[in-house]
Length: 257
Image 1: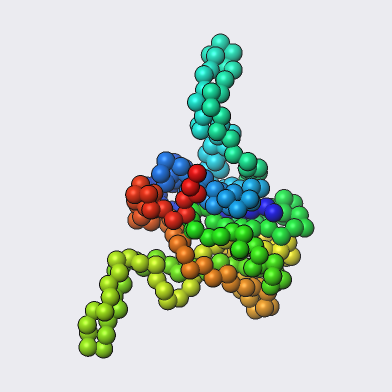
Image 2 (image 1 turned 90 degrees about the horizontal axis):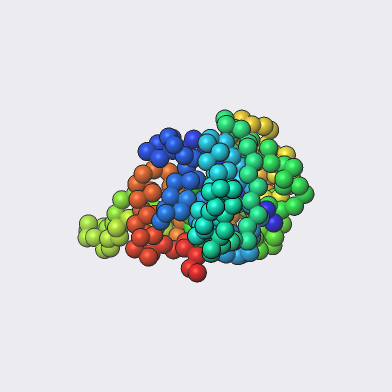
């Protein structure tokens, strides 16, 4: 089963980094967040990826073209350019890197990948969020209900400390920036049937608007409820949260080796 990663947006809210690189290449713990996302899927045996490129897509292409040299020790003969890898750190990933247009919207990028998707169920996620989601259970849930589309619903992280207050104004509990327990939002991590592509008109189509709304109205959209960790990386503050979790060995999404 293929997994599409949307990695073509401009990432304007993280312009401290995205002026020189696409947001999926912004690093957490010395590795692009894209690397973390691919590891999440590979952990459960899903190793076939299609990266939907756009803004500064050449940076992502260079990363994968030079993956072995970046991850391994080697000697190089400068007279002929031949490299001898001393410790080749390989991964069992197949990665297709496809230009889906500079200005395409999220739905348009998916539509452009129709020939890569073919007639099989596929997964889709954004290139800027991590979670400790069980991908295998997500796929099992999708196959069990038989609908066109599954969206993962998550609890967003609170922006500020959360207070539980009694009628007498006693503070019954205080949690510093917890994962909220009320309300659900779109956390990405979709599973979709190929016929979902028929709901996408073209490059200008936003995935989160008409296609998913139409699937919902038709009774073809189910929600997989993920109560665990989830965090997007929209802003510098978000990046700092993820970096701190990684550096303090508290990253819930980490695939421990």
